[in-house]
Length: 109
Length: 120
Image (cartoon, rainbow over all chains, first blue to last red):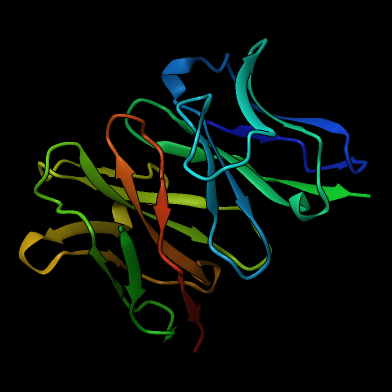
């Protein structure tokens, strides 16, 4: 059973930079996993931020970027703002199914 | 503009079968490269992918839930239906459907979600 790992929580100061990661319990994440990232605030449906590893979804601010860092997918927020405080989820395509990570709760303070 | 909306019962009893409908607009599931997926989220927990159906009727299921899930589409009604058998209280969750372009394997547009509680 594939497990996708994310940091449970992270903290960043306003204006700071933070990188959240998305890894595999076994093996490395590559572009073939088509990593996508979603932002979710309480009571709301997820909002797509990044797809295909590094493509920003329409309307998403440029401070959000996606990449592969080492053997993981990564979401970097450059110049964090107060309203970036949310839960962030990645999902990886595993060839015939998808697996979500456990999510990262980002605090901006 | 693509929109999706989930509908179905808010309360089901243990062992019953859940049937959820995703009604969408702004795209056709007969168009090459289009898919619709289902994802759920138990209260306070992470998202979990359940199933997906492609324009060509190819279907994909979560390996851990495959025996309990069935996904179908009605192209003429712009609907996708998910059934889950033998419901248990641990299946209590918000269930989302989402548009999924084949070319990027993402879930780019989500419905608002529907809350399903499993309780006797």
